[in-house]
Length: 192
Image 1: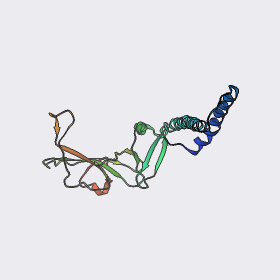
Image 2: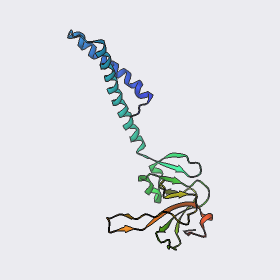
Image 3: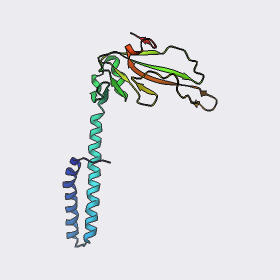
Image 4: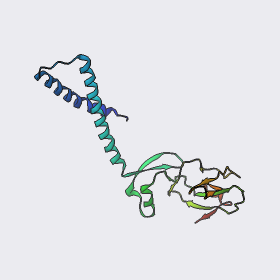
């Protein structure tokens, strides 16, 4: 757990009050304590108070962040928090997602998938989704999702099973994002 400087500043007076109360209790009951025991006790009390204060501040920060969605801009790479209420009409689907991007390139973008098979005989023209300037879109930052790159002629395809040994798949998809004018000949762009 990480703590901020404010967490430390808030914890000091609370821990001091608790330690003073324990010292008064010891004085009233005529008990004695060793200096090492007092020091260890003070450290433990401070640590417990710090954990409580840090947990409370973290939860309050999470409650503030729950009404926002992080959006990453394509050209600048800047991440901003957008209030969920700013997503209207068709954009309301982005309220519950992560990995949301916004096209701030002032150019049309296309998001498309290319199917690669073991035989290498898939000749279907990929269908691309047009993303206009200012539009939001979902993008997964994985090794199978590539931005501003042309599809390779081939890629490694591994047998994988989604439902056990009898349902092996011998193909894979790579997802691409590029400018519409770069891929217009090789991709069928919807709405272009």
